[in-house]
Image (cartoon, rainbow, N blue to C red; front, top):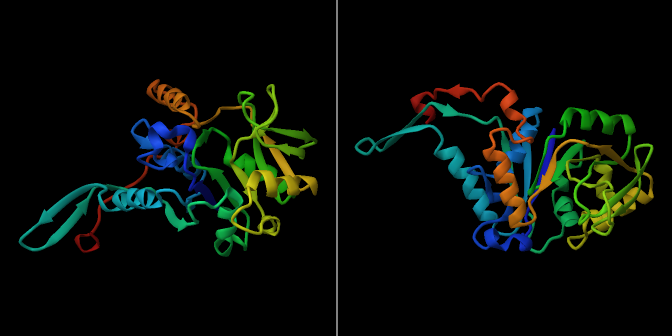
Length: 271
């Protein structure tokens, strides 16, 4: 299952951090929030990632290059001009880093990935929010509903927008406008390739443009998640997530329940 993560925004509401790094690279517990999101998906066997890059995209590329090249122990023989690696812990990820433009909107970023995604169901989320949603249950729900798109609906503070849901189908998608404790778009979406028929250019918002049209056609399902969800919009959000991580039992840490990543001893010629 391919997973798209939108990682190209400028993160203007978190400028205390995002003047020096892109928002998905802001760290929680010493790891980028992007890493936390990917570990969650990987726990459910979703290891094929497409990162839609934009603002400071090279920062994200360098992170993954360094993570690959510098993992484990290194033995450098200057006389023989050789490098040997050992005791390498491997994340079973395939990470596709795709430049989707600095100013491209969320819908446009998805559209630019069409050639990699247009043949089958795929998942998508934002690079700034963590959640303990059961990905297997989400996918099973999506398949039962038989809609073009499924959004994970969550109940956060009232400063976000809302979803009106009836019998598991979204009747109205209102981004950042409702007051009260209604359902809102928490990311962690599932799409069928038909979603691309609702996207046409870089300037389109996935939420305001495409998903509104999908909902109007009765093709947007909502998986109601009552568990943990938290985005990282502000410095206050970052501090809150950091406190949860330091507590030793962060609610989005699903992967520690799984078998630890394998330790692979590389043959010298493979180093």
